[in-house]
Length: 367
Image 1 (tube, rainbow, N blue to C red):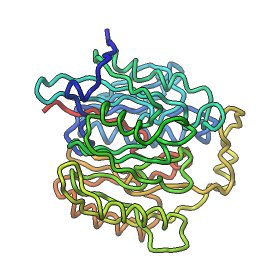
Image 2: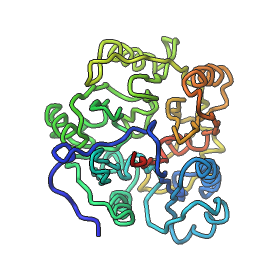
Image 3: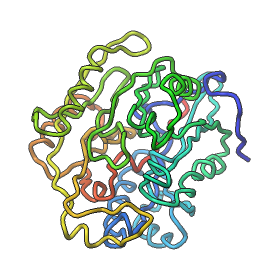
Image 4: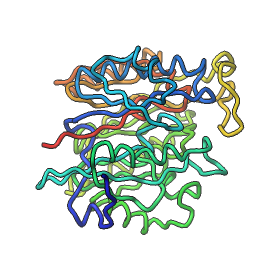
């Protein structure tokens, strides 16, 4: 039985390994919401199956499926993939799923759960209810037989970025928002992050990219590929609404150092030119009063930094933009010289307001 621990990861010397460290396994959720995913979620299921079937060549894969979709998922997935019947509200496991913590001395693994409110609660949240999503971490800890901590604030893991060496990037727009923690001060937030993520330095970034329905997600803006190398989404177009965000982020990164006093190497990757949601893509989504509508001509946000680093491979989202894709792949080839780069067309994910990394939760291997 998984038990809650009432001390903190910092006091017990537990930390979360970043994604670029070797994995034990990955966790995904089978998409089903017909009010978020078009055509009865069939195209989204196809892309999630494609991703899972790629991942299984590099690490163990668990995919969470409802009882109604169990046979459909099983038919599309590699036989090596473990299917777990469980109820969720949607599939963005990176935001509301578990964080796995390791003690490097004892090799013990524990979990960390945060509170989830669908990116805004009953007034501004993307969908209602979200209680099954908020319960998911408890169920996974029970399956994995892991004791766990609970972070006492509302936080999606997409709002932070960890280097595994005592530094945490944090989204002001997300964490300090009235949509999540209206009475939380920056000082209080820093104390919680330091105690529960076992870090000594917080680097605050003002916001995520525009048009992000979750309001503050960082992984479309930047990602770490090692302890001191950052991929930063970029545009030189001063009329692009992303220009101010990426420029301000670059200024912050250039003048900051990590917890050990090391500067960051910044590698810029062009933002793709993404077509707005088409009329056809809008008409094939069910209406639900408890879900924010996916409107015709709605702007969609995507980037190459929302990639997924797995064992011996890197899954890279693509968006049918040859110019930006060529530039991004040229930079990634220089970085990941010992990993296979695998392209995944992510248009279907963008239509559900997510990108590739948002639907995968990594669990690090005990080294």
